[in-house]
Length: 487
View (cartoon, rainbow, N blue to C red):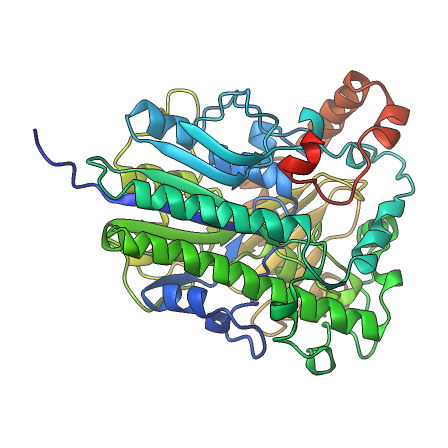
């Protein structure tokens, strides 16, 4: 028999890790030595984005390698159910073992998600998820937002305990593969630094709240002047619970949880090396979306600012150049194409074509700043579909029924100047707005997508028993761990 020389594939994914919160990204405070070392031996993508700044729709897009509006897993109450073929199933059907360890946020382990094995899976609550976000015609009161500030502090949480269990399970599994005679793929999914912002003491002690960097726009209390962003901010109301002292503690806890997560990554990569498989494994580190952490008055995600829609992305291993910064736009929908490329498995394109490209190919090509990257949001707090396209130095954000936003990220990296309102008649602004809408409509018709989404969500509300059931049956601020759900 011929020896199978294909590499292994290890995908490490965290939750809510903003792309600038790494030493290798130039952050002056946060400590991420293991991610920094991974970036040094591989390629870091500086312009990577989530398909949707919300956990559940993004996880569905990652699994299928397709845009949210194409697969119609719009929101946190419409999780991936295995019906659209996943890249994991492609690999498994080609004889590649594919294991998941940790958070998935799919509907259920009883669905065929495509894995050969799911260890310690976290799926959505009750196979349903967060239903309050379906109620977008008239936004309800959402009181759970107060928990974010209330949970800030020192200590262990169910999430940090869960991450330790995930890390230990990954170490055990990797050591067990040392004598494997065929390549494998693993999807190891940690929860940190996702809130609750309760941080183990050793990691919180690494950061002095008094020395934390202030959020963007904090000094002059800058808030975007935009009707739909007002809806999002008014629904979640996170910022009203944070005075300066609480904000500083929250940032220290977030950075501490980021360092805790980095240590988990380090342990997993050490196990890979100890098992003799490091040099023959392609490693990809990403997060599902970022976290605003008070920037411009927003916390958590849901918006298209860089801190929310941007994600960290590092690729290393066989066939990947070392020490490279890749400025080509990238997306989490590229993960499917990457997995198929690394494992040498063809995509069944008879049903649908994938929009993504292999990140290994992008890492080896010259930078293409003209590549369009796309994201969309149709979940809680929004009254209309939000669509973002990014190319060159431009970001165009389209809100159905509301004014657009346009940012020149080179001149205005903190996105404080919406050129669509500050200089709407400038020739460069008009040209960029036109180009942004052209690129958007090359991907989808935002009005048609928005109408389809609201129709699907109306049907989902009825299926779940109506608006009152959505308001009362699945109210929580963050998904409980598998152990908590079983209680």
